[in-house]
Length: 77
Image (cartoon, rainbow, N blue to C red; front, side):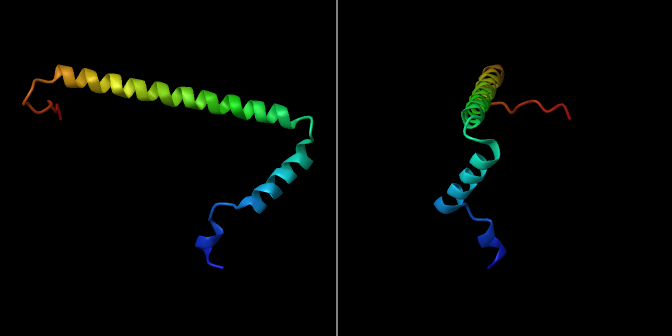
């Protein structure tokens, strides 16, 4: 088997084995807590990404409005 094939995404059988191992390691009672924590983490990441996108757009609009039309931006270097 080539190394490139070893890095491919896991299929359904591999995912099921991983989920079974997680179930054995953490137990059925801890799985909802883990899933909740993972969901909250993903929501925080999504909020941070959206905030970054808003800041980039805001900065882009500020730069566009402060530049004179037809002139190149000033480079102090």
